[in-house]
Length: 90
Image (cartoon, rainbow, N blue to C red; front, side, top):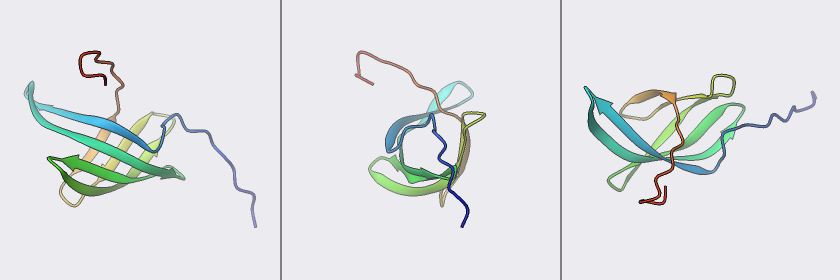
C-alpha cells in the first residue's frame, strides 16, 4: 500500500458560491454553487437555481485555480471569484 499524500487546497469545502453569468453583457443566470467535497481534485456538490438542487461532478485544478463541472443540463468551466458586497453581506 502506498502512502497517501495530503495536499492543502486553497478551495474551502464545504462552501457556497454565488453564480452569476452574462451573455452579451446582460445578466442571465443567478444561482448558488454548493461544493460539498473535493477529493483528489474531484468536486462533488449541487447547483441551486430557483430552489431546484441539481447535482454536479467536476474537477478542481489547484495550480490554475480553475473549476470545471458537469450537471445533467450544462457544463461549466472557469474561475471562481470572491467579492465582498457589504449591502448584501456576501
